[in-house]
Amino acid sequence: MIKVKKEEITFERFYPFIFGFVIALIVTVFFSYVEFYLIIKPLYSPILAVLAIFVGFLFTGLSVLSASKDLKVMKDLSRLNMLRYVREYFSVAFITSLLLIFIALLGIVIRSPDSVFFKNIIAAVFIVIFAVLILSLHRLYLILSRIILTG
Image (tube, rainbow, N blue to C red; front, side):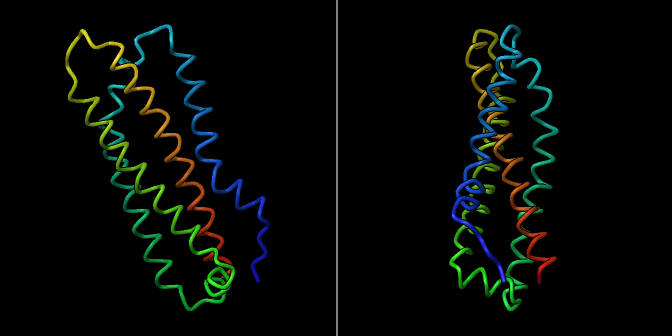
């Protein structure tokens, strides 16, 4: 049987956002003395390709969940009203993936040399959302592996 403490749920729900902003702040401050976007811009295209893999991972996770709804662990999650958190975690990962795609495309399209400040802002927001996405995917990985190993 699954036993979950309220503190664990609270931490699990918010750690991608908290640590994502901390990581992004550290990276942004570290590169604040250079034109930050020049470092990030070459990464936009490869990260778009990697995002396709992340989205595939999310769909695979959803299919694993839907296929395992008869397992004892899934019944326990449903009984404890924990499936709503799992849905929320998938939603956060999808939304951050879409935001990251949009910001990466925006970073690729902006060509004006006069918009250095705007490009640096886009790069900083990109780092924040990327960090949140990676931590959200890590959270989903832990949950899905727990479900598969327990089921």
